[in-house]
Length: 235
Image 1 (cartoon, helix red, strand yellow):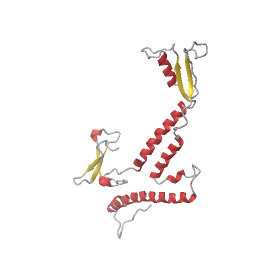
Image 2: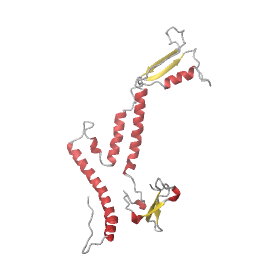
Image 3: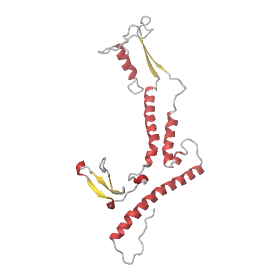
């Protein structure tokens, strides 16, 4: 609900003074200003006093972006290359140039583009096949050509690598152990220890923000006779 382009309020010293909200039922011109003493700010980093911090997911973005696109390419390759690479040969009696009203070349290009390996797979050619009743050099020949074996990308390995990099950002790479027939129990346990330490660090930051800005304010508003110290929140 933060106001787009005008999210934060800063004081004359550069400190965070509050934030602006534009709920769905309020026009952007009628933004609601909320002072920071009415809120608790949780952020991952405090570099340059940036109130938004830096998301853990930002370091995963590059691997996620490549993984997402490779999955789409893999699906296209399975659909287009499942039967082979479609090739069309046009004989001397077939018009090779495109025309405004379509023509042989346009029809042949559409056929090649729309070849799919799916439940509606099929092909109709309104020309004689080369060498089947046609005169030499005339007609049309359609065939599938197998792509060269060298240089092909193993999509599974590449996508898995990017998934592992995403998990490594959060020190959670141990979730992949056993999926590829490698990984010892000792390695998994030590990786889980690192993950637990990382999560504890995040949670301690959350608890610290609550203790500094919520507990103290709460006990200022509530008087307890004889109280010598305020409690601390622990995870």
